[in-house]
Figure 1: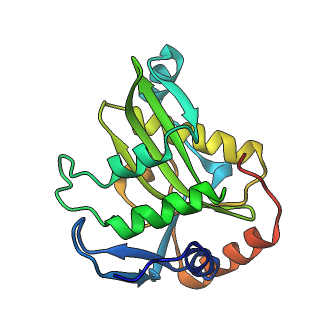
Figure 2: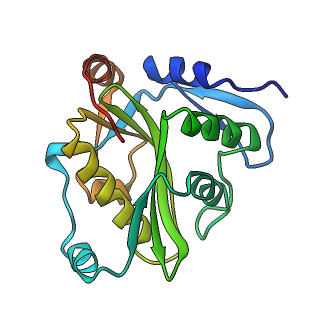
Length: 197
């Protein structure tokens, strides 16, 4: 198994490509560039009414970059409705290296000091490439997403890439755009300066 280098990952993201494996235990990695790309426009982010109540309740404690490896390993676990995941050991190690170098970040949600939800992604320029999220309690990953969007907007990010579009992301204002439109947005975001930290 060849080691996936952090600089290889960053180069791929800079041209709109990202890696996946077919299964948690599949050692082969392939590169993906969707024809239709999912993004969440930061200026059109929508919080469903029921989630606003959860946010006001302070049910979850939210942290940033305090448990990256815990988040990515949780994202790699099977979950109800998701028996296979695309993260293998090589990808986990590569993203952990990116996090150590300050290019990958996580948002964590906690309940009674237990990690119950979160997400992680890669940051370059004013672009954030959302990779995966997990939830062990209802609404835990949604709360993490709200905090991510607030952080990106406050720090002048231009692009939140969700890779693929799902019904789950559409409820937050997520849309699909074609490959050419995505590449234009990506180029503009990479030319801009923003800092996740």
